[in-house]
Length: 564
Image (cartoon, rainbow, N blue to C red; front, side):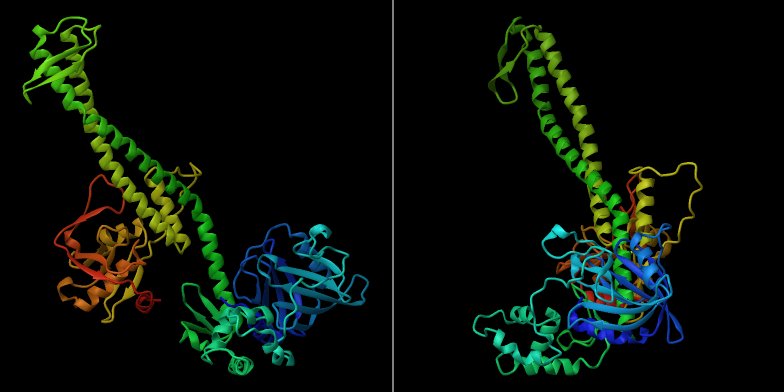
């Protein structure tokens, strides 16, 4: 993302229509975020303002939010001082991520008063502060006590801005002074620009640099001015990258944007709402993730113990031989011996057999036969348990991979239901009426030739896709010996072009644990050759008559194939 001072400048300009608007209602969603319900320009609007450590922002929102039954103290203070008031100005402080909203309201005795609502977007130090016209603090959504050695944000104290280094405002004549502050021989020019210019982000500096081959004394200021001139074309853009980027104007160094929006508020509303959804989903799924990780680790330890049992059981044949040799040479073995040396007729060499001197030769032979039988049974049991444990580890590894890619609340619910069915967790609220099971939604894609491709992202979806949705003549794909999704081309398999098979195989590779690798092997066969394995956990199948291709996952191609 790139919510820098330049973006703030464009957003403040966009929100100028709120000036002279009336604040009808103020609500506080949580400890960091507020919603102002307003009337401006003959329409109703919702202005969201947040001091969240990661999602600090302000914009018009169309989303619906839940509010606590008992309003927090800060919202009560805001209601007392500015609810029913009118916004008289919205101003950015310099080119920084600080916004001052001036509000004209009426106090308890009917006198006009001015209040200033200050939003500071500074990461974990972000804050929302209400002051009077003389900048005397009425309250802040976050308090800073007098002993914090930085500044004080408490009722009754005079407001002081954040203790930041003095920087040049690029929207004034100060910009021309920039070359004096840059050492062009020391390198790290981008970092020096960030240190000396207010409100710039690395994304913006990369855009400036794209207009010149390299920075020097003569071109650095003209390049910034040229970029500012191009940025007068306000267009909310979003770039889907490893680290997503949004901005208020197209960025030539990033190419064509993946999505554009009519307003900056619309961009922020969708971007942060989605971020909040994902955060809430991951928080909700974290308990299940811990359960799966615990079961996975417990099964790995079980495998280690079982392998140790098998190593010990490998001694069984030696004990059987001891029993046989003692029986064969019993006439030559006396009582009370600690050992006996006899000829091993398997190797024609002498062998010393340990004996329990408290037992007779016959009893020693029986003791070794018992040890043999015990280890034989133990080995048989351990081999079966080891087979099951390896399948369980594969199952839990699959679940862990699926948990990494959860994006919706429905997917969390599907995993929860599966854990309950497998008796890994218990159903809560026994005796209560069960909720109606939601319809499983598969992820749908389309090949270049228009063939539909369905992808399951968890075991519930995989089972539904393979066993119910797909037909016998459809083509089924899965990464070879790698945890991943079931993929089906819903078309008569013999008629599917090779190009479409490769595209579907790429989807299977992308939605697997090898999604970041190259040359991923993907098997494909007709659905009629895919069978469930009786007595196994969900997601396990066996298949035959398969072919294998090697493909490279391509995120851009996946986005092109995704159906809305």
